[in-house]
Image (tube, rainbow, N blue to C red; front, side, top):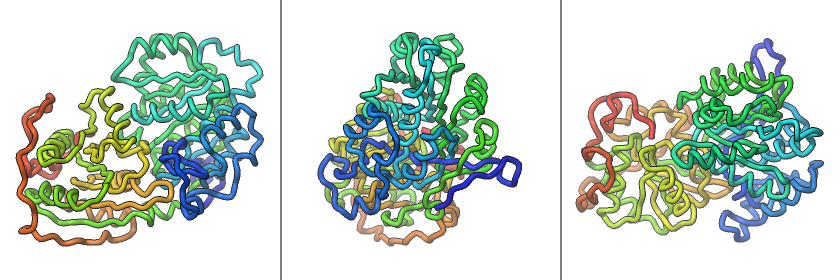
Length: 466
């Protein structure tokens, strides 16, 4: 673990503090994600010796921490909070599942509660949290409502897909903290629903994902509408810190502090990682076989395209599994219902594109199955980070098929370790029932082979994001 700041222009433009995102309201000092007492070794691996009571926090924040069951900090919280609470700009990088949402929310709450003239902002927000996906924005908002329930602060949510007028009306009435995705936030901003001239704390969550989704121009646009870097605090979080994220930090942060937690371990030692080499036509039978052998599994199956997600989901349902698909083509309200069912354990299998690979915390995921190997090595780490959260153990199973096997060496280089090879007997694979008929507008069914060409799954080269 390392921390420190570097003067701009001295080699590395800035230092930053980045957090990896889980739902911090599921991090308990004395309870697991179900609210039950957690084993002592769980606490030892997840929590530090630093208590939240060691910080000078207003009583309204302390009450929210008590409601959430927070007593001890995770390592990223312990390293981040002293800086963030003092008003320093922070950028941080940490392994997935380490729990940073509470850190930036507490910094926001403290800054706004200590504002000597809150009325000067009028109905405009005094803090903004920008997230790359709707699901992550909703999750952060939920955590803010719990942790900030005693602060008297108003929290607004802006994301696409649903409730356009409802969200607009709420923001028009005034909020203290605006949480949202770039597109919808800019939409309302351009309509003069609010301005960003009074922002005291800006948070950019999952900065590298913003680049992946093409939002970086929007992010720069929003930052230019805020007070300059020396008149506001900025907290930036990212799973990885490539040069493009470093440059963004240099542009919009002021003498930022860098925090990295376990930066040399991109994957957790508590995840058992294995790989199979099926042919394309063996992938679905092998998936069915593995799922049938699991006992009480809580599984996320990752694919690279929406069409593949539709095929795999219908095939699972046609062979007796209770599953659902989470992809960009699924309406927002349905996506939220599916996530709630999966989070509650009512839905055992979720078939997902990478829309769910980052930022979402779903406790007790026992297995992550890469039905399609990701085409970006970093996405492999983000995917398998859905399991082995908060001290638990898990298993990541990958299929290196004809279309995607050539990505495996890059993944193994990125995680700096070989993935254990498991052989399978093609003659032992089950005969499958027909896929459940499609009920949505997913286009013509994809073939079991998964498409032609280097991109696989009919993507024509570069994959379409879910």
